[in-house]
Image 1 (cartoon, rainbow, N blue to C red):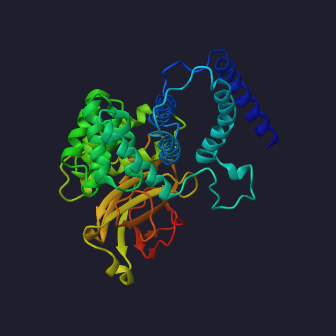
Image 2 (cartoon, rainbow, N blue to C red; image 1 turned 180 degrees about the horizontal axis):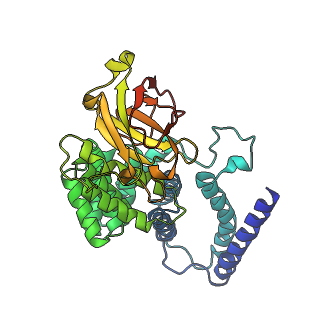
Image 3 (spheres, one colour; image 1 turned 120 degrees about the vertical axis):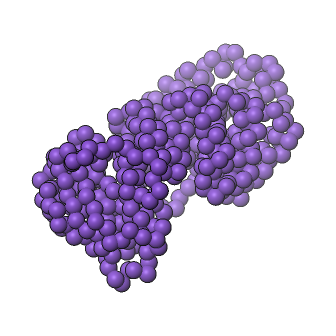
Length: 412
């Protein structure tokens, strides 16, 4: 911990050496407004966050926290007047303020995306001294909305307002704000991806229709926008176009760095799309060999009688294989529906999620089956699940009984 603190102090001191002395020598430029300075600084921070998200170096939940912190600080600073900053009178005060703000902001960002409990194990779980209350945040959002009525051409402001409404769960207003931002900056692919996401949430969590049209515009501008590709793949998957879903998601895999924690989630989604051939009404089939290439496991999945009343015909049933000893990442996944139970299944190497993660690479596997109300590939509380014991690859008589309701995430 001592090394971490010392290193952090050295880095902060170095940053101050670049910022404070030039400010003391030159001061702020005449005519620069307080709002303009704030917006410029925070805009750069937001762009860096978006770049980290697109590169896969920042997980979505960490991105949400950090962006919320930055936007809350900006919302607190804007709209308080446009008085010009004096070039010399406030130079020393500004230098002092920056000298204090740099370490404070560094600490705030670390608290938002880091692990402060590793440094302070005794800190209370609910402590959040750096944050703002929900009421304060809503007041800031209202103030920004009022400011935009007076300055409706502020595209950056509309984008921030759309994001803020989304954080509050007000997706109808969020999509309207994003629409105004997109009308003023139509060439921003990331903005269009955020707009499509908010609009989909506003219209009942579906990407069909206008959201998908917006995503096509985003990908025409930037074919490598990660969020647009992920959403476009989801839209294709939801209309049973497995080939298009795989195409979009495989492109995402090529854009993510090797160490990104998003890779396994994208691979799981690709495996689901490849199993669309087992779903009623599937339009697109991904070519599979007539005979299994290498390993195969087959058998039957049944539902325990006492859980029969908890499964609806439209529920999603995932049937998967994972190594009995080794990584827990699924080696093959098949997607069915509740109405298909009991299910005769067959899993083979053609359903592999990665070339090195095939059934034939492991002597023994565990077969699992899970009923999901949300169609989420990850286990959720309330899902129904059953697991076999270890079986040999090549076994054709595996029996799996779905007999357990997941109460937490221990069923992963």
